[in-house]
Length: 307
Image 1: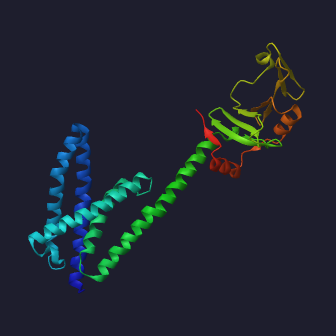
Image 2: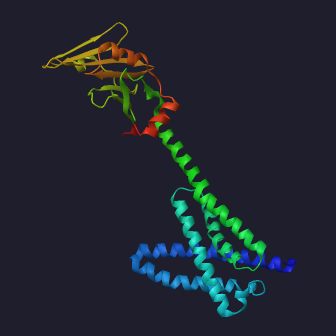
Image 3: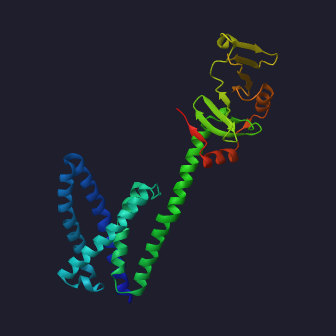
């Protein structure tokens, strides 16, 4: 390709890009407004009017390329060229819209508008009878597929994951976990604005049992025996301020609850399955929820957010 033809080819592709970067977003907004105001019928009417007009504008943009693109050498050829570029470019735009809908980062609003014209310029480049121009178009196409299909979605997934972790970590002062009692496993955890609740259940699915751990915000009122004592319930507070509540059941069972302060927060463990020493061991193993533990709980879907 001579220098003059190379310059004309570059100008041709830039003209296609600029034309479509201006027209396609305008067409999209027009369809949206028509559909918003008049429903599907109005949107269809706008599409029937807008698409031919866009193709004619694109055919006009092909006029300067008559010497470098054989299809643009005649009015009929330019129209066919415009239709082909419009169809191929629109497929690329729709792929970009799908990627953007999947949270792939396509930059600012201005960048997204500029990118709208790229698929049409790439389609036009494939119709230029020059090996290097077509290889360049292939390279741009491959880059777009790799970013839109692999790199972008991976980045979007990392952003979603980081945002989810941030939501769980919003109230770090509540995120304390105890080691699961022997023979038990953590089955569920719920993060709420003023509390963090954890459930432990036997590892053997054939065994029934339950241990609950609740970490409450230091801003909530402290528990007291006056709130707990009813028929069949005994309550005591030791010298360290730890509260012990036992609820006796008519059948002979009982529910044991221990409440203590931990780094300003109020922590309560309760169970009808685990004895008092086991509950104390659970309290004694309280530790901040680590990143590794949170990752595992998120992966196993044992942690949720309550409201």
